Image (cartoon, rainbow, N blue to C red; front, top):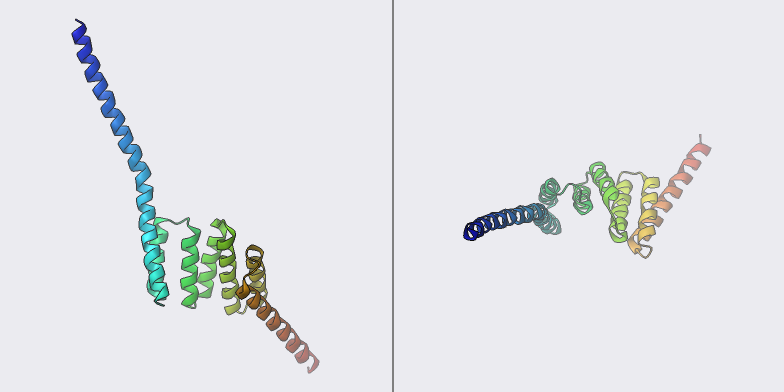
Length: 173
């Protein structure tokens, strides 16, 4: 009679082992699916960067949009989108993406790049005071950035020049 219990135990044990294997497989799949989605996103980012470097900004934009569908919360993808839009001279759209990126970003280097890009987009939109603020923020995160320092001084000089011209035009009225 003990042999019957032994068989039942074996069957029961193999059932539990099968169930345990199934749990492990499901857990592994749940861990892999996001990884596969992220791998797809980063494959699209890689393609976008290649297109960007070849100055095919429209194609880069398309690749970055595909990446965004797979990983909508990535500040790097939004930064790349903004950079491609900037190169396409779509400064308002670039600013939208830079703003999304800055909300999600962590890390001084990335934040410095985002604010620098924002400064350039504001500069191109003739929003010099906003450009100055963005360059200042960029320099808070990366104080030795010579390009940000140069652009900050250029924007300040233009604001000063415009203020002096406005003053002169008021005198002549």
